[in-house]
Length: 293
Image (spheres, rainbow, N blue to C red):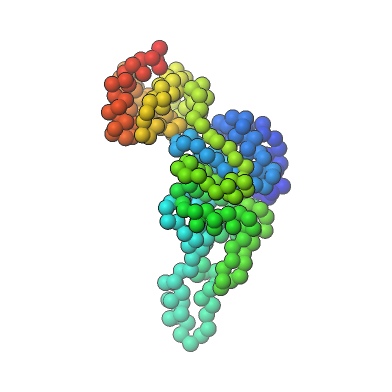
């Protein structure tokens, strides 16, 4: 899909919201507007929020909306240029040199170049969307490298020269806000904060993404999860965990466990930290009973 096609798909925030919903992602007006502006202005989209609120899922839905492949660069402490840009396949180069004997060989040919996510997107910007996931887990040096990439959308390979994107790629960055990002990076992006949804919207999401969950179950799960997140947990459950809890409790109920016992027995798919489980256990019965009322 060309840039012009992308603009046509994202004709308005309302059109974006409708296309995202078709990809099973419910976006509120502010997120749909941020996606719309990022596409129309040709700027990266920076999505911040707590773990589990749906930032990565939003990127997947945006790529599906545009009919493009999602190329994901997962950031971590110590990530460097070789993992993000490119590297040479030294083993293949050495084998090629041995097989060539006295004949000349270009060891910097494409077949020896391993394209990492940034280079993959530069080579096909009209067919791919770049997701830089959890940029806050990388260090400041890598953030500076990424900022340089976003400034010119090009990569300089000493042995090959400069590779530039023929059209401007669509780039999405996510951050859990474990550290502050550089102001220069923030200024370059369209920014949106994704918070946990309210109970009504979370119930809609559960109904959309869960397998065969009744509406009453989805609403009960959403209400209970809202209360559980309000507790001082080390790892509050995300939306995906809420969907899993609804599915697991439904399976247990169909297998013979009555409500609310099914919810209590399935708690391990919602809370995944031993201290959090111990903390919430005395209150779980009351939370579930209230959610089912």
